[in-house]
Structure formats: C-alpha cells, structure tokens
Image (cartoon, rainbow, N blue to C red; front, side, top):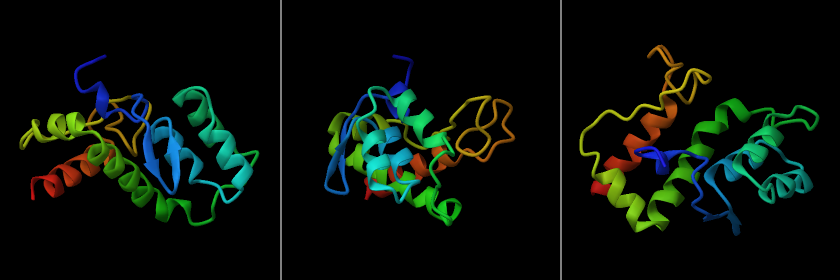
Length: 136
C-alpha cells in the first residue's frame, strides 16, 4: 500500500455506520446518494470499492435532489467512523501532526487537488478537521 494509502476511501477498512457494516468508506458514501433502499444495498454489497463507485456514479437511478448540499457531511460521517473505529488509523492520522493533507489526484477537483493544486481538496480538509477533533 502506498504511504498513507489507508486514508483512501478505497482502503479495505470496514466501518459500522447507519446500523450496517460497509466494506469501505467508498461503499458507504456512494450508497448515501440514493433514497432507493434496494440500490443502496446493491452498492453496500458491491464486491470492490471501484464497483461501489461505479454504481454510485450511475445516473440510471435518481440521486437525492439535495445531494450536493449533503455530500460533505456524508463523507465526514464515514471518515469519522473509520478513524474512530480503528485505533491504528487514528494513530496514523494523528501522526501527520500539523501537515497539510492533500488528496493528490488528477481526476477529482472536488475531493482532490485536480493534480495541480487547483482542486478543492475536500477530502484532505475533512481529514484535517477529524485530526483536530481527535487531538482533543
């Protein structure tokens, strides 16, 4: 695994959230885009995080109208579960001290930095927020 690969939503750390066990934070996040409980369950049971992501990005099933206003909170809840349910991940996150955390990827300008630093880096910002909360 790449250094800090554990921070990825694709990292295989099952989380307990919303009375269910999710194989990864990606599974959990993608499923929350939908009201359709059967489709949520299909995403939850997806064999890989990539498959969960593909199902979540499909627009064959209608996503929540207010998804854009909810997605940061959904991601926060999934990340918070992950970093509080695994002491080794909490230790790894706290070990980054005051470093700026960046999701460095060319194919995402919202959760990542777009590869050139112009993206919003929302994932990195949420990880830093959780790190601050865990310090207390």
